[in-house]
Amino acid sequence: MAARNDPLAAFNFLVEIDNIAEATFSEVTGLEVEVAAIEYRSGADKLLTVRKLPGLAKYTNIVLKRGVTADLRLWQWIKGVLDGNAQRANVNITLLNNQRLPVVKWHVREAWPCKYEGPDLNAKGNDVAIETLELCHEGFERVE
Picture: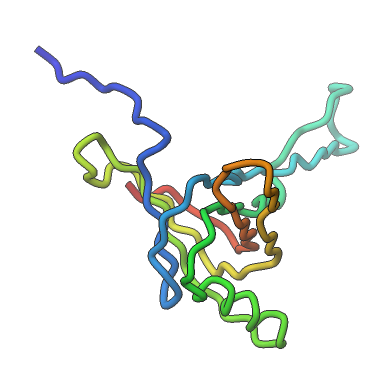
């Protein structure tokens, strides 16, 4: 009998940022790549259609959200960018199975923080204070 290949739950993941932090985030979005199509037609083509060739790959920014903590490492990372010293880092985003073992990993290259958003504060509610960090990067690949 073949083993089942069930889809993995989206809530069980880990984010590791080289030399910065291993942090728990409540949300990760932006693992997206798009390859532009270049339209080309040679004058010698007899058909009245264009050929489509692959062009440049464009990666969207990765957005990380987490509850605010006393840990300042992520803030210090973006503060370095604000001070003119952008420290690039590799980021690993790992999807875990029910036993918290790694199953799928995305390796993000040359990331640096390009946007920080502090929490929305409201004395009328009881929500967790969430901060957002957006990362520019030079590409990712699925390695597991």
